[in-house]
Image (cartoon, rainbow, N blue to C red; front, side, top):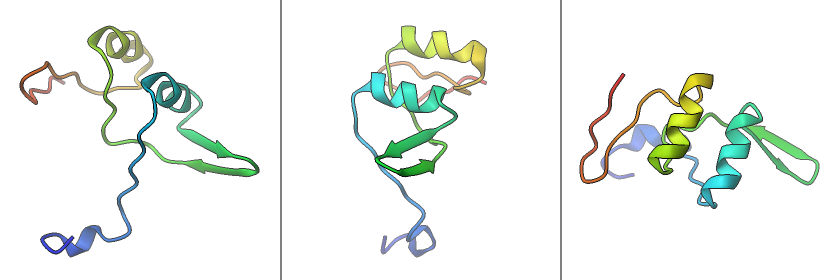
Length: 74
């Protein structure tokens, strides 16, 4: 945060199994905790290539990257 103070309060980080995160994305980015619902659209979602290719037609992912490099395709 010292290098980028403008990001303070703007980073939400969640680590869950990919299947749970995928369900949140498919539920219009909703995270439900008891009676609290938060909608957070992720900037990064990590999963296997097969899962990402399945999500691509529904416009839930905008690019894929390969292992070893962060090469995105649009």
